[in-house]
Image 1: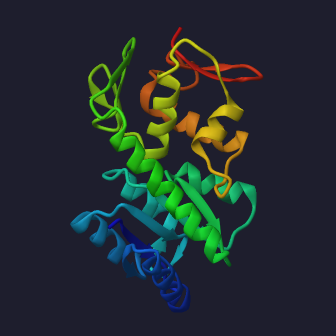
Image 2: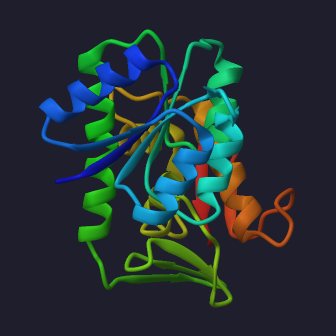
Length: 227
């Protein structure tokens, strides 16, 4: 049974999320503060975290960054902010998806399931496969990339993107294909979001992220690893 941590300070929303997810068969724990959330994640670990951006004792974006320092489970941000730049800011902290409140219950459940499904499929498929491209090794067992043997610390979505490109090393992969493969119809997927993840990956694997040697841009089309 997948376990989900809901971090939401508004009591009605917290109870609504808990009831919705429990009806779907998930084990749900709820908290209302940053301190409680960090304690829960570090003590117990979870398969997915639903994280509100505005919390009484801190910023959800900063909390997402702190969770990402030690964990790679999917994180879905919750916020009343609808602007694209707000969504991109959420993704840029390490989140895998961003849901605007008030949300449609069926859509929220579908997006949570999509994140869990991808994480499970990634851990199951090719669990002992190593993909090597120069200094880069993509390790499905670790669900991380290694640079000169050192873990890069990729998030779930970053690893999914890196793995997809590495399986096609030397070939250009279109932005549209990446969106189609890694974002469902219920999720937020766009060229800008792909660019956010590419930038984050480069910061972790390139000597100079502004002059990449491994993860290359194919102008007007997409991206390529190696070759």
